[in-house]
Length: 131
Image 1 (tube, rainbow, N blue to C red):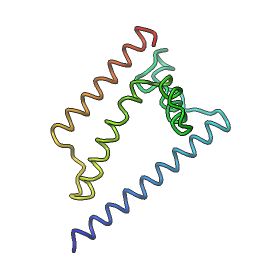
Image 2: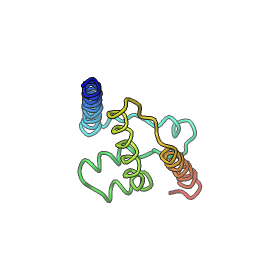
Image 3: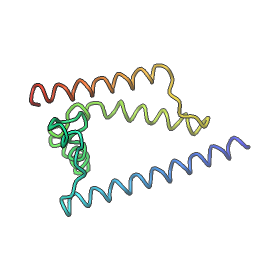
């Protein structure tokens, strides 16, 4: 019985946190669309180069409109990696609800570091090759 109560509390925390994150994201999207105000990429502002995540706001707004070509144009590598990132996040959520710890399995950690490596290579390639 106690385990079920703890799992219920973790689910409530996740739902509240997810709702808050979703609400902030939608508020940011509305501000972007209505006022044209965006959070600038500090890496790009300092170096003049695009970071691996440059275009993520445009990508997310395009996905909200179900405009896959625009999402692809904004950041194709991040769009391709999104299902893997969502998969890892979902596994962490399930593990957190069941046991209280979102710690990844060794293979998940390797996958996460592989995704980071792909993003870093993408960041370098998009600047060197002008992508």
